[in-house]
Length: 181
Image (cartoon, rainbow, N blue to C red; front, side, top):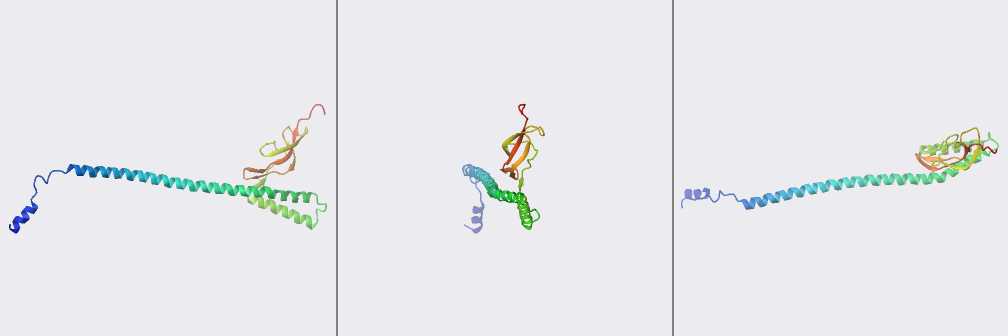
């Protein structure tokens, strides 16, 4: 065979060659569809895992912050007794002009300042309506000066850490004067 005939036979396409090979093509298209669906499922799963990880991180941070606040609150509850002792010492000091008195007064002022810096404040109670969530009534006192349920005396100061009560104020509450008195 000549070289030209050899080239012609190579480039010759028969009718059989032009028929579509449908079975292998359909199988490949099915496989592509299956893989595309798997990709979508994996992308969805990945997105959900990322969101779950983000939520877990946020939850852990919130839990840490809450535990930190509770730790501060527990410590502050115990330290409040020191302030009470200083306040009692000042109230019972006979020489209000002494250096000792002034030093204790400055110490107590610094104590209250530090509490305030950390979000711990005294509960304003005197002449306010009794609130069982902030006050502990030690007794009641008959009086015409105030309506019933008003705090007439604060026996021990109450404190709160932000909006949470650390220690309720111990108070005496007014009540209506009875007819028998």
